[in-house]
Image (cartoon, rainbow, N blue to C red):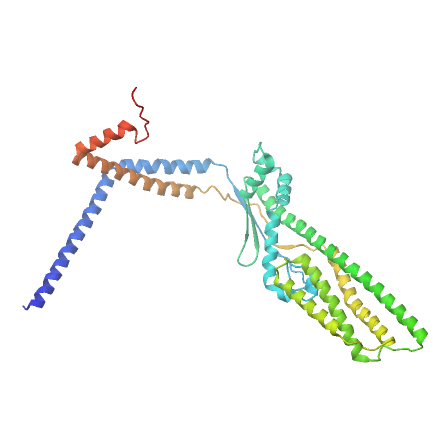
Length: 407
């Protein structure tokens, strides 16, 4: 056997010796563990059994809580102004729906969440079902009852885009009524908010329509007077595309002004769509300023009449839509699942309480057993040092005793 082979053989034997030693040590640890558990088995069993049974008993006699779930979807306004939720329908008609459509659905659901958690909605539920008396609240009834109601409700937006309303209560019939009443409140409050916004839009457009009618009437009178004095008459088919293009540009300006005004009341100031609309209006104003005169005299006056007519053609349908939107009372949400009377309780769950008690007491009992076993072994192996440490501990109450100087 050469020297290299001899060295490798010694290494292998050394590794085997170490492995055997580690396995022997591990076996002793496992054997020691089971010996301690066997020694204290009665204590461990009773320490686990009693609290587990007690937890199950407490859960069994505790008041039963029931859960009712209502699921809703944001209503799609497809009849008049499709393509945009969470933003004014007039803004959809003005053509900004495609720019905001990606974030609109989430905005709608966020508004629903804010409504359901609002003090107005919570107080209506509290007053409807007399929850202050149900929850047996005596001091600070308004504040504490709302907190208790919020702790017994859960509003969540699911991945599919639906809003889930969960309500807990001790009465199965009442909990179903509460879940459905939350849906009713959501519809009523959101419809009121939409109607208020629609009214503001209608009033704004109504003012523009009135001003446009006055401007159109004045332009027609001026044109009529000028034609009677000058004797020069102009028909609608004269000068064709030149005047028509100017009129279209002024109509676009009016459209952008209304679009910008509605967006300012609908979205935040830093919203990209609002900034884009303001930029577009600025560009249109620049083109209007650079627009050359399309003639003189009668032609200029006729151009003004045509501009006002184009603006009127845009404003009147928009005004009619605004009136319809203000009066419309369609629901804000579509109910997918109504809250039903639950057939069985939702909590407390007896098996869950017992499982938690079993796990906690098992860990705690093993900790106590090995702590006591360790103390006992220290006392057996080093009795003098143990009694010395115990005397020190007893003398100053674990370091908490205040010693007074003797006079």
